[in-house]
Image (cartoon, rainbow, N blue to C red):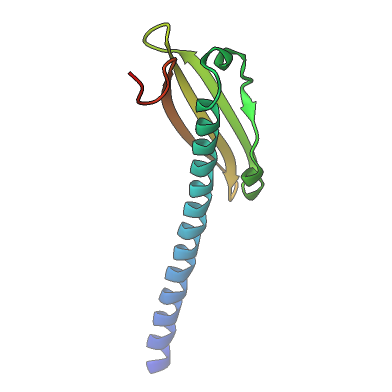
Length: 116
């Protein structure tokens, strides 16, 4: 009887550890995708405002090799006025056969960040 109880407890613990490992692996990939998006936004913020319209839609990052089928997409759209643009940066990848995606959206102004 003790062996049966011990077996059930061990099987439960093993399944909890496997689930925890999967959650950690997925969170790690999401953190990498977030870092890639943030780095691309910061790189674009350093560009001249008038050069935003000439950006291509796809981008790459060395960290993207950690993501299976990782692809970066950026979209620049008109903002609330002539001196504002909406920037959307996305990273898409595959995790255990499922499509994953991280999107980050920000606004860029001609005057830059925190300038009056």
